[in-house]
Image 1: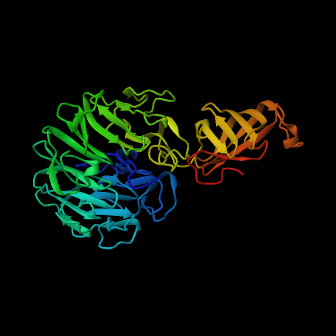
Image 2: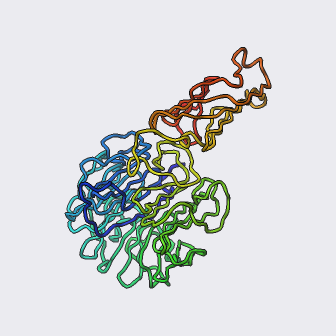
Length: 484
């Protein structure tokens, strides 16, 4: 399911930056989401990332998934960051760029096809203002308002009129007045100073509508003249207009206003053709509004309510950066923390778990410690183990239901959690049985829990072990041991 076509969201660019005083509390200034990992630019000009790490896309020198934010090694003076599909890139204050992660198509720009778990310099680039990591290619905006790209070029991703891939940057001809660039999957779009937008690459995911094949060179998007920002996403691209409304387009539709959004200062949208579409925007007042036709994974951040309307995400104020990808979204609210919500199978919400969150949760390791004492919400959600299910509320009320095979209902056990101890990645809590209903005692033998019995529920690496019958449970997105 995690193919390159999975939805990847808007890259947030930070064009200017002043380093925070050493004594200041570390905060985030921008966030960028990939399909299953996230990176944040911090107030000390460093970068932290979290989530999947199979190709080294977190930049911490390992390929170990991280459920909380970890520092990118050897990266200082960062002014912008972009998370793509299994890779990440950053622009630095000295005008250079660094990338890390997957590199089979030369998308790290270091002249090789060797994946890297720590940042490497993109060769031959100077005057870099911003960088955008896509699927198997990446692009940079330069200080002279031109664009350079590198990596795979089989669909025209490099925009130089050929299909010849390059592991080092090549100039995109004809772009001389560019103020922003966004690369996603197999295409890119650039914003002209006059408010027009040019795109190139696979036209299955961008306009203009009259073109049926790949665009090997930048082509103006029709009927769009007042764009102030641009973001490419799989299967389409979007622009925020000077009117404060977003417009999106694809191969079969010209730019159209996204209904329900107004007075917008930043917009992030994702679509991959697998019912994962959702959009989120920052309004001029710093609030966040989201919409999805299929919000069943919590990607609009308002709880379990399923609505297709544009809704305001609760608890977020003074938001300055937002990025949406596949089934989840992350934002930087006032105070400089990072809050994320939605699907969390890769730990991409950064809260120390792999539990889907229907409301925003704080990323650990930025404004909150990556280790330390967690709350009961660490255990909340639905946990699965073969034909067993365990549901835990945010207040610690739990119910376990056990079946044997398809048809035999064995037992229901209700209990309540308290006294949480441990860290966010390894936690335990006191559990006291409040109710027991036995349907088939022969399966259990003499191991039937009783009301009032006390034990310790344990959480480690996304797996819960309950003490009363000794079984394991994990969430649907966890690839580990879920119980036999």
